[in-house]
Length: 216
Image (cartoon, rainbow, N blue to C red):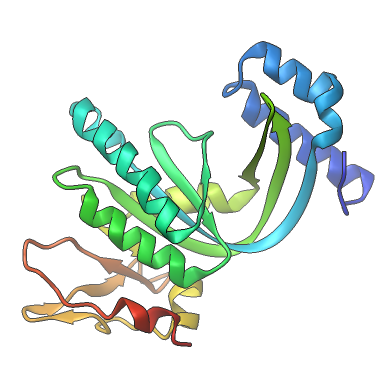
């Protein structure tokens, strides 16, 4: 097992990873990873990342639409080069090094969600990534407070909407009202205590300059 953490911190991260994987991996795979030879493949690396959380739990009564969204998620993620976390229930969690790519993916996910009331949250901050080998493949999954925070921010979005935290949009030069459509602002203040931006899905086509998100 590889890590730059001290032994106490290393033990805590290993316990967090073990708890997360206990309910996601088959028992034999979990045992091989944490008690067998695959344990040596585990390493932890702290990075400053942007996380996109898309919650599909409100759409569970439309299983075919959710399945289509899952297929689109794979395609969209391939376009924007995120790291899709395969260990999240009823939601999509994707990590990015580039916040601009994260915002672009969130907005594209909103479009491909069609009539699903998917709620999307985008946050940025320090995040511990766990890398490991299981089932003859290399995997990575985020640990710590940021995944839960991304889910909490997504929960504040309106159905079909996106909420972007301030530390994500500020470096990109986004402001409330920066993406205004013909009938007013598409981004609006949400959660005043966090100064977050909310993007609400509309039936009206809005011309948004996505390229400007990475111009800074």
